[in-house]
Amino acid sequence: MKIGLVTSTNSKGQIVIPKDIRDALGIDAQVTLNMVVAGKGLYIYPVEEFITTTDRESSYPELLEKTKGTWGDEERGETKAKRSKIELEASRSRKNRW
Image (cartoon, rainbow, N blue to C red; front, side, top):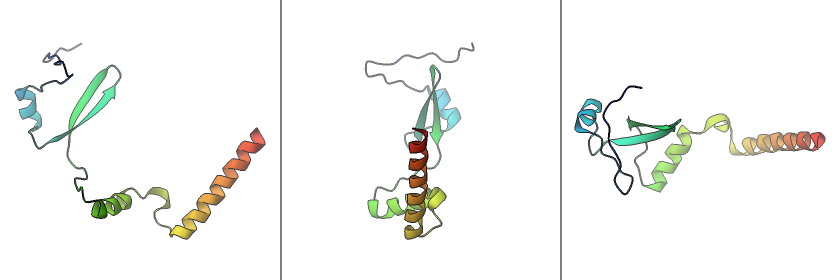
């Protein structure tokens, strides 16, 4: 195992990212970091883009537009009918297996 810089947490579980690493990754007070648990370790990396708007009226529709997924191109009434049909078929299938 390769050993890099070793640090420990304080009483609140906080760690300090050493200045050399912050400089190398371009991390400063304005950079948001994402943390991912991987096995028995922690992967921390800078996030380049995320939704920063706190105005619910404008950010929510933008979020929905970005994440509309499978049903996004259909009208609401058509979507409801298709979802209902899929759910009924799945229900019948589960009932038959039971």
